[in-house]
Each structure stands twice: as C-alpha cells, then as structure tokens.
Amino acid sequence: MLDTHDAGDKKNAGHKGRDVEMKKKVEEIMTKEVITAKENDSLLDVATVLKENKIAGVPVLNEQEEVVGVISEADVLKLLGSFHWYTSIFTAHDLMNIFGEDLHDVQQDIEKASKMKVKDVMSKNPETVPPDTLIDDAAQIMHSTGFNRLPVVDENDKLVGIVARADIIASLYEK
Image (cartoon, rainbow, N blue to C red):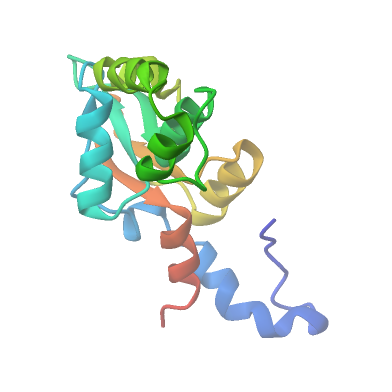
C-alpha cells in the first residue's frame, strides 16, 4: 500500500519527492489514446489486439460508448483454464501427441472460444475514476480491488484515458 507521509516527519523526510508525485492527478499520467474493445467483438480479435500492441488489457465499451467492462489477459487465461485439457506448459503440438486421435474435445473447445464475445469473458462493472483523481487515490483503488488498470471517464461517463499500475510507478521516478 502506498502511504503519504508528513514532510515534517524526520524519519520519512526522504519520501518528500514521492509525496509531491502522489499529489499529481491521474490526468497528468494517464494514456489518452486508448485502445478499446466493443462488447460484441470476438475474443479472438481482442486477444490479437492485446498481443500486437503488447498490452495486457483494454476497456470495453457498449454501443453508447460507455465503459461497461475491462478485458485482460487474465480473463482470457481464466477461460482457457476452464478447459480440461489446457495447461500453459504444453504447446499445441504437445497436445496433439498427448491426445492423439482424441482431439475432438480440444477442437470443440477451441471453436467455442473463437465464437465467444468479449462480453462473455470481460470483468464487468469496472472501477472508473475521473481525470482529477489523485494518483494516490487511484493507487489505493487498484490495491483494494486488485485491478491493474482503471478507465478514466469524464462527467458524462465517456472514456478519456486509462491509468495503469505501471503509469503510477513510473510517475514516482519522474523528475
């Protein structure tokens, strides 16, 4: 958990610079050009976007452009983990050797997953924050919820950015 300390506290005097950074607002460190997914996008398409952009998750928007969820690598892995044959240790080639002729179940699961929509797998009702949220408050929300990223929305609940744990950590080291 991140703490703020009284700058006059002698034993915490070395944290003075960090305290100033934590008083910054989310809008100062958030990513403004946000890659998003739609509720009805295919899971396969979103997984491809995550991989190609080297990101771990994206906000999910409905038809009204409101944030209704977040889809992340963890959500995809949770789905894969529900298939009795899935393990991150084996490659597709290994699975073929293990299951041999009995790949029908594996093939059905893969087809099922490829037809799934983002809305079927995403984390629903995500925590969102307004742009003027203090970085310290965003960090506290992430800590208490376990979320790695928070969509940033304006007063009309429209997405204006996203802040990730990495953004918060990087802000601590900016001069």
